[in-house]
Length: 513
Ligand code: UN1
Image (cartoon, rainbow, N blue to C red; front, top):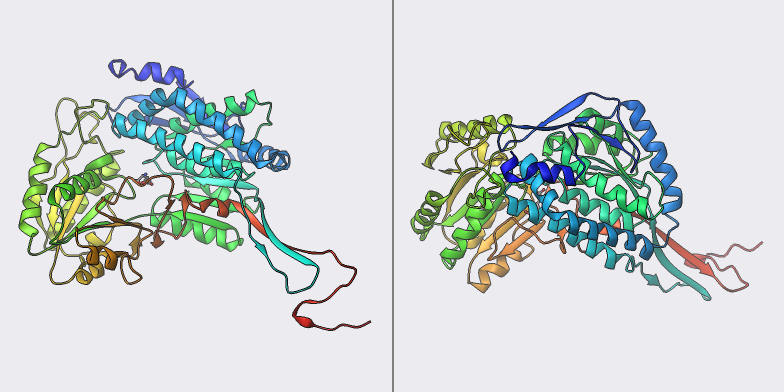
């Protein structure tokens, strides 16, 4: 592993052979079991992380709730200043952190760096936002009265993140939550625990240097049982969870049972519609990056291409040609396009999808398969595959987190393609490739795409942090990151102030004493 400089990266990030997975900042402790983190890149054991026991969790929660009492009183722009410093520390750590992301998760080094860049960008965004946590003012119906609304900090925010964006999704949540005056408890995926430890170290340094208390940034580790401690905990008003629809349904029900709020960012089944007016070159780049980038493990990955029958063969041939150029291998080597899947369970799911699509009557046009031989010893490298299929196949309706792309055909008007694209339970990202303004506008209209993200002449993945990120239907309805996504991390209060010596009642009610 040394040839990739991963050892230097681990050292720079303070990752030891055995790490405490529970932390309130500088205070690290853990009494739970040990998780071993193996790299899907080469199967190496990168490090171990001790998980969070119930006792550890209680300690975290009591420190976090105490920290909230003072953090919420710090003016928002001064909280922004702390986030600015955190962004600067991320700039300093960009290379080692990008490398760890790449090595522990398996995405390309460029994408690892890109992920850290998303963290830096959301910090910058949050700093500006810290002076813009605006409410509205209203005109009162009563004379001498003033009405307005303000946003106050919410409390302890629980963050459950997935392996595929092991650091950025935490930052989207935590940078906003911090400027909003909240404190955060983060449970990273048990598949990428070292990324969590590394980020916590960086955050802890900043809080400590500013003389701030323990507990503003907390880390817990473990599987769903540790996540359940948060979902069932009435001291956590908001749980933000990213992951599968299955997980989201469990989290949503547990949080709703105690009338807490949840912010869910769940599965996608993202499609690109390719109309007769599409630019084929752009379509190929967008579709291939969308389908094989991050080895098809983004929630925004392109799963379906819905192609007009008049250009079907042309697009199909161009995509198949592009797949022939793909180089699969070590993601830390810049010459490779496609790295490994996260683990061998993911490989099994990939194999299952390919078997299933054939069993349902699909036609494989780019063969898949698990890579073997030198450089592929981890057993996690697979060939990106393409199948011609039908939208109503059970497997096409289902999100497989792997590089499997389904080609679907439509005829007639763009509305037929939109109906296919909307004909799944997920509603995260969608795209249309067209130079026809009428088609583009129909796709974006009220009767167009039903997804949270709808793009024109761009693929489905690679959203910028400035927009609100999330989706409809079984994707969970949450919005993270840009626009006014910050509002979910605060509580809204409506205030009416009477500056007269009378007490008129609203709605003209008379109550004479
Ligand atoms: C995810 O896969 O959970 O839009 C997040 C994208 C990235 C974020 C994906 N910016 O593809």
